[in-house]
Length: 258
Image (tube, rainbow, N blue to C red; front, side):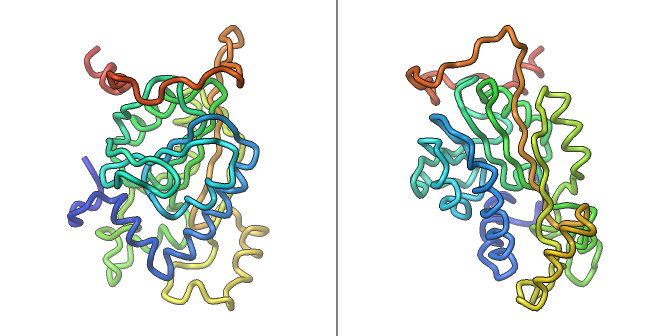
C-alpha cells in the first residue's frame, strides 16, 4: 500500500521531482545542510539511503563512510558516487548487521508500512549504527496546507504523506531499541510560492528560538543499541558482504510467516 495513488510513479520518485521546484530546492538545501552536520562524526564502510537519489549526494560525500548505496523502487542503476539498487524499503536485499548508517529522506512519509521499514533498518544496521531520518511535520503550516482545498493538498506530494509526528516516530524508535541522539526542526517559513524569498529569513531564526516545534520538517538521528554482552565489530576488520548471494530475509517477512 502506498500514499498518493493518483501519481503514476511511486511517491518517493515524485518527491524527487518536487525537490527540483523552487520550494523543493529550498527544503532540499536546508535538509542537506542538516544531514552533513548529523553525519560529521559518522564513519564506517557502508551508508544506505532509501529514496531521494540526487539531493543529498554532496552532503553524504563529505562524511567518512566509504561507500553510499541508494535503494528504492525508482532508483537508477548508477547513482552519483554510489550504487543504485531497486528494492522495496520494507524488504531490503541487504545482509543483517552490515550497514553503518541509514538515511531515510521522507521515506516514512510516503510508505504505508513505516514500522516495517524501521524494523528492516534495525536489522541491517550494525550495533551502534546510526539512523538519520527526515519527515514533514504535521504540527506546522506545512501540515495545515494538507487541508487547503485550493491546493489539493491531500492528493499531492509532499502534502499527501502520512503526517507522522516527532512523538510517534520517537515511540517507534524506542520500541525497536534505538536511542534518539538528537532531533532538529527545520524550515519555519510557510510553504508559499515565494517562501524562499530572503525577506522571510527572519522566520528561520525566530522560529528556531521561539516556536521550535512548528518547523515544517524535522530531522532525527538515532543509534541502534545492543546489550553490553554483544561484541561490536572492530573497525579494522574486513567489511561484511552488503549484498549476499542469497538476499537476506526481511524482518517483516519472518514476522508474517511466524
